[in-house]
Length: 143
Image (cartoon, rainbow, N blue to C red; front, side, top):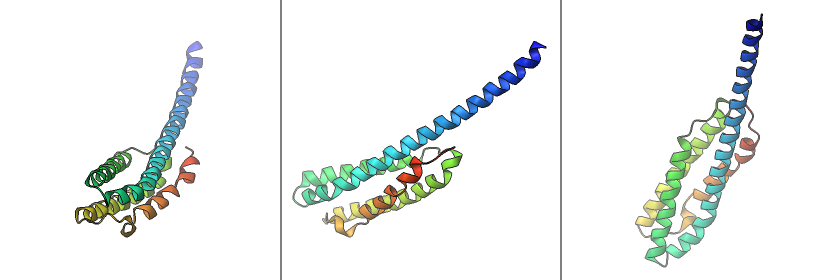
């Protein structure tokens, strides 16, 4: 008789673990995506000043290129994470925007190679603004 009680209890416990895993996965993804978006926003805020400095100094140009390369790596890292099923749609949207941002960054780096540091010819800030618009959706994700 006790065996019959143990099996349902184990099933309830296991299903509870699955729910807990789902909630943890939701929190992890939401936190990771939120952190990425905040970093991206800070990057976009710092680029105009770095670009102004780069127009005056080779060292500043190096610092600008380093910041652009680091952002490219952060994008690649974020694009490579496995989003939980309930976040697939927003993650795909972010990956698409990130791909656009990578194109913008690469184009801007080409400009810098040609001696043009003016950020005004780049769509980096506009693309980051679109990425920032996803933050509310991410904060409201639920499994």
